[in-house]
Each structure stands twice: as structure tokens, then as C-alpha cells.
Length: 414
Ligand SMILES: *[C@@H]1O[C@H](CO)[C@@H](O)[C@H](O)[C@H]1NC(C)=O
Ligand SMILES: *[C@@H]1O[C@H](CO)[C@@H](O)[C@H](O)[C@H]1NC(C)=O
Ligand SMILES: *[C@@H]1O[C@H](CO)[C@@H](O)[C@H](O)[C@H]1NC(C)=O
Image 1 (tube, rainbow, N blue to C red):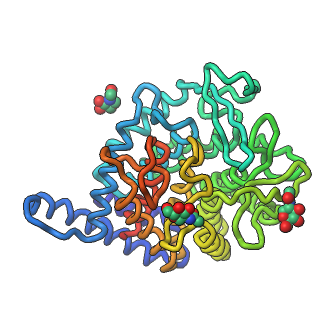
Image 2 (tube, rainbow, N blue to C red; image 1 turned 90 degrees about the horizontal axis):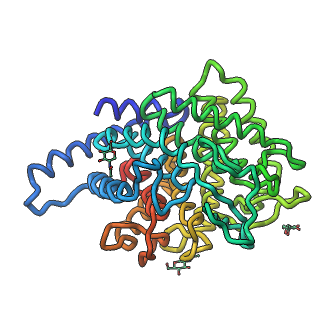
Image 3 (spheres, protein in one colour; image 1 turned 180 degrees about the horizontal axis):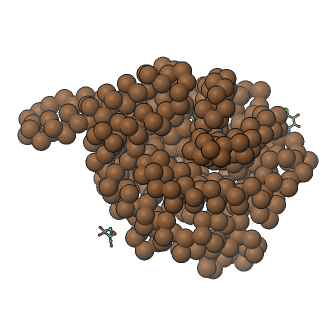
């Protein structure tokens, strides 16, 4: 318990809202503890659980279901793709940071995945569709119209796509935060080093891909976020990561990808104009976590105000009147789009810990409630439409994405 509480409090930047976040972490941990005690004593007696205790039990159940897809041999989650597995790693890492009962299992996942996933060496190629979703093809045999450039061949945690690399870097940083094992931090630094080679675009920022076909929001938000995360975790070597993160944000904010409604479009055209492409939830999410880390690293809380504005705009643009988050691809989001929404919730939760707003807390709670009520099948697997009914087949992508909303709710005590 002590270990969990110290994780919660040390992960929080020393800016506005620290005390509130620390207290909510403490309350969450205490009520989780009481739930475990009471559930042993009162298991056969009808008993109304507090919201947080209920969330803890449901989230642990969701974790056990997710792990049914985990392969020891590959260190990846079957039914989820390469970059999706990096997000599954982050999801279980986020849960381990606030729930000590799963931490030993999650630590085994970290150490196994570090060794095995690098060897799994998935041959793949990603294609941007007309709606700016992505379609990923996995080898070894590809459709005849899919060209696989040399640069996409996977090596370690690197491949031909800088966004995929960014997801793995963030997963290993979360593993480091939970364990303080510097091997995970070093892995993230090595991945970031490769990402920083993607910067020779005509538009500024980094390329999405090593084949240099597209400059988009996701790869560039991830580059910002990983740099800012590293700046905070390597304070003695801060200047470079912090400077990269600051430079990256100053560029990003002036590209026009953030539109007049404060939502973020998919990317830039070949002539470096905003392409007005689909407003996907994950592009509204990664930026929030990046700006939270940047506020801490730079000591400038104004980045949190920007993040708060983007978060509110995203909630307005992408949720139903009932306050449930939707992506425009639903219910047919494919293997990639089915991951998006959890990334928004994970990062909104991170923003809420440092710059709380009733709107955000209520949104996290209403999405958690909707998922638990309407989006689980008979095997407790969660689908891509959070307002239900559950879409089949539920995969490790759709399930881990919905689980991000549960983990965010648990961490915030709702
Ligand atoms: C996977 O590895 C863990 C830890 O070594 C072990 O407890 C579990 O039984 C293994 N699962 C399978 C299916 O081999
Ligand atoms: C995007 O929208 C803006 C504002 O409506 C417009 O000026 C611009 O031409 C559009 N860009 C593309 C690529 O359609
Ligand atoms: C709102 O939810 C309903 C039911 O799930 C869905 O059919 C509809 O597309 C949603 N609206 C938006 C804007 O996503």
C-alpha cells in the first residue's frame, strides 16, 4: 500500500492541484483496501459497494480478461497489433501504478515483454485510408497491392513508423515509473533517439514514416510527449529533452493542425497545409499528456490551460448528449481505430490529476459507467462502442482501450 501511495504522489508534478490529486490517490487506495477487507468478511451478504471499490473490482476483472490474450512467447497481446500491444503495456502499467494487487503480475509482463516482443519481429505495413484511419497489414504474406518498403522491417522496438516507436517509448516510461528499473528508461531513450532521426521534413516536425510519405499529428504529438516525459525523468540531462519538447510544441501549435474549434486534425498536406482530416480521439489525447509533462519540465503552468481547452473541445466534438465518447469510425474501426478512445481517456485522466475540472471528472465517470453497463459480452470482453451494444469480436485492442477509461476512473476515485 505504501508503495502504491508513493507512486501516486511522486508521479504528480508540483504545480496547482497537487494536494487534491494526492488526496484522491490516498482516498482511492484506502477505499480499495477497505473493499478487499469487506469483501472477504461480507462476501455472502448483500452489500452496496462504494463507487471506487466497485471500480477497483471491475478493473481487476477487466485486467484478468485482457491477460487471456497475452502471449508469453511473443510478449504481445494476440488479436491486437504491434503498436496496440505497446498501448496494452501502458494500460496495465497505469493500473499497476494505482492497484498494488496486480503489480506483481504486471511486473512479470514488463520483464517478459521487454525480452520477447523484440524477438517477435512482426513484418508489417501501414496504409492511411481515405478517412485518415490507418489500415495495418501483417506479414509474412501481404496482399499484392501492398508495397512493403525496406524501412518497415521491425528491429527491436523500432520499425518504419515513428508513431509506433512513440507508443513503445511511452509504454517503457510507464514501466519505469512503476518499477524504477532503469533498463526500461534506457529502452525509451534508445527509441526516442531513433525518432529524433525523423526530422528532415519540409514542414518541420517529424515524419510519420521512414518512407517519408506523411507528416501527421500523431507522430508529432508522441515525439513531444516522449521528449517531455524523458525531461522529467532525467533531470540531470534535462536540457536537451526539454529543449526538443519546447521546440516541438512551438512548431506544432503553429502548423494549423489545431483548428479554430480547438480540435486537432489528422495531419498536413504535401505543401504543409493542414489537411482538415478526421478529428480522431487519440489526437486529442496524446497532446494532453505531453502538455502536462511539458508544464512540469518547464515550470510553466500555462501549458495546462492549453491542454484544458483542447480537452473540453474534444469532449464537445466527440461525445454524445449522454456524455459517451465516440470516434467517427464506429462501429467498424478496424484494428487501429479500435485503440483510439482509451488513449484520450488515459491522458484526460492525467490532466485531471494536475488541473482538475468537474467536467473532466464527470466525463471519465460517465464513460466508465456506460462501458460497464452496456459494453461487455458474456466473457467480460469489451467492444469498441462504449455506449453499447458490445460489438463482436471484442479484441485486445477494443478491450484495452475501454480498460483505459476504467483505469482513469479508478486512479481518480470515481
Ligand atoms: C506465462 O508466464 C508466467 C510467468 O512466468 C506464468 O506464470 C504463466 O503460467 C505462463 N503462461 C503460459 C500460458 O505459459
Ligand atoms: C482546410 O480548411 C481551410 C479552412 O476552411 C481551407 O482554407 C483549406 O483549404 C482546407 N484545406 C484542405 C486541404 O482542404
Ligand atoms: C451517439 O450514440 C448513438 C448510440 O450509440 C450512435 O448511434 C451515434 O452515432 C452517436 N453519436 C455520435 C455523434 O457519435
